[in-house]
Amino acid sequence: MDMAAMDSCGHEMADGHVSMPLPAEEKFTVAVEVCLKANSTARADDVRQAVERMMEKRSMAYVDGPIPVVLGEDQFIDENVESICICDTDSIIGDNRFLLFWQIKLQINVYQLNEDEPGEETEGDEEIATFYEWQLPSKDFHGLWESLVYDSGVKQRLLKYAASALVFSDMGVNTKLISWNRVVLLHGPPGTGKTSLCRALAQKLAIRFRQRYSQAQLIEVNAHSLFSKWFSESGKLVTKLFYKIHELVEDGESLVIILIDEVESLTSARQAALSGSEPSDSIRVVNAVLTQLDGLKKRPNVMVLTTSNITGAIDIAFVDRADIKAYIGPPSVQPRYEILRSCMAELQRAGIIVSPMCQG
Ligand SMILES: Nc1ncnc2c1ncn2[C@@H]1O[C@H](COP(=O)(O)OP(=O)(O)OP(=O)(O)O)[C@@H](O)[C@H]1O
Image (cartoon, rainbow, N blue to C red; front, side, top):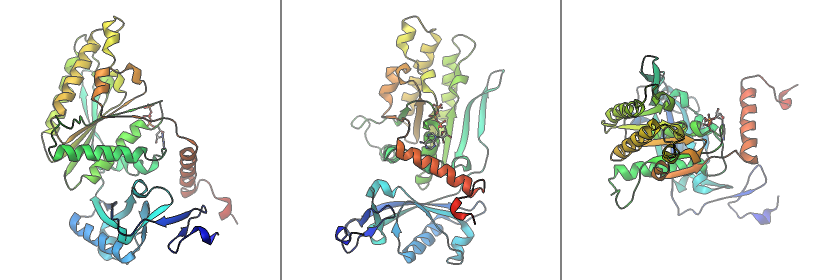
């Protein structure tokens, strides 16, 4: 190792990079997520204090990932805590750096997973579900955020935007001066994880805003169910769906995240309809969706996440309403390697494949 490349505090990483701690005078907020056991009835404040004490005692360098809970170290934690995870430090410190315990301020988020199956609301004689409803944080989305690998910063930027938008609206920032619709549009080719990313983001927001919102729900709209076989009925179905959403949003202590997958089917370009190639019922649907979204804008506890594979087909008025339009493309070489590596690690964990290093 080239010692000349390091100062007295330098550390060499496994890949040979020299990693330097950040200047000592800077304090960074580090998110720590603490998942409670399903049977725990401990108060979040008590858990927060116990975890803080434990982390202070350990005086460690902070990098993303789970912190092992050592049995016998703290009985209260043993009894109540399922897992502890440090999150998103890479967005603070970038590559090849780490945070030391005196440089950080912990933001400990305590949560318990909801184990219920999603509820559903049906419509019409054929009983097609118009939306599915999950109570967040849900066990169905546990670990989803961590499993998604993208080129640097995509997930962090989305999370920062969504969190800022919720804080701005909660603090009553004047929307005439700073206009936020709290609408996100993820677009890109099929299969690049857009739907998964939206669900994972909803779960993250529910965890991060646990202290502000005691409840959180994800409403996943089934766009196709909103098209009626009866001409002119579709616009009414959209209005009916949003009426139910408005009822949920009424409770100011509840965070409501709406996911509309394949949003182009609900907000198809009106230009095409006007040119005669689309029936006019679709114009009613687009108008109804836009009107309802504008109605939700007044509510600080709502966020709308949408995805699309064909951005060109979306009505421009909807695209304008999206504060963030993020392109989610196929992963580059590094994320591809990481995805394959995590798949192999999982197969190894399950005992389906065995590493040659472990064979006799
Ligand atoms: N970058 C990624 N990292 C890890 N897993 C990924 C990634 N992209 C896609 N996947 C996996 O691929 C599968 C398909 O993802 P998903 O359905 O969310 O994609 P999508 O873009 O919404 O697709 P579609 O547009 O066809 O609905 C999921 O199991 C997801 O976990």
